[in-house]
Length: 317
View (cartoon, one colour):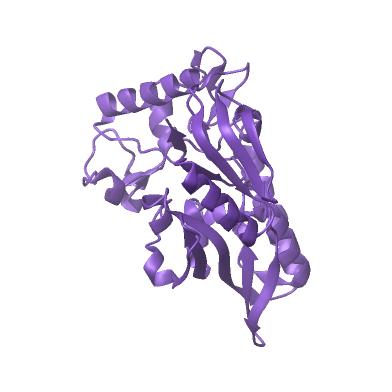
């Protein structure tokens, strides 16, 4: 087998959290779709479960580690599938870092990904979690026209955006995580001037940097509370500002802040003083430290507001 499979690899260095004490029983970077099929066949014979890791920016593994195979897709390709005077359709490998794609598209004068600047991870990971910027109400699923993926046997399938069930920080893939691997994504982008895109990106990045805490984190831990994901109408909630109720969205960070949890520490982890929806690993935090803060925030918000905080990150037991 061409692919190199490593044993007993520490998981923390693979994650933006840099947290956790566990190891992966096996780890493999695959360089092509052919290698991926080969490795999946090997894992099937070993009866191993697998987890596909993107940029490691939205996930936390328990301190027990992962008794299976962690896969990382390392094949990167961008190609034009079709274009006209105003739009271009790109097919992009799922393992491509999102930042690399954003930079390339800006140079070409292809707009649409501007609002995603500063969001870490890979293209596949962004599509999996339907990444976006809540303040502007944009998500990457808005740009997706199709996805090529394979199942655990390496059998490929291509589906259009309508099939992928995109919603706030969710997709069909997130609801079916263990059996389907995103290989390639088709995006529809608008043609404009590179200078216009670069100016807009600079403005967006400045705004984001003002609000995003420094340090090791996985980005926003919880989804913002909406009428849909809270499963209740909070239009008349006495503790929620009218502006949030009118928009139908309550920022998770605001709810956590109102519970007095900014700066709260557990072991090597703390709830950020700058943005309460971020948990920072400031001193070799364990996954247990971070999970304690996750549960604490959920319990406090539920007790004070009667609202549930749903995880935006993925916690792998």
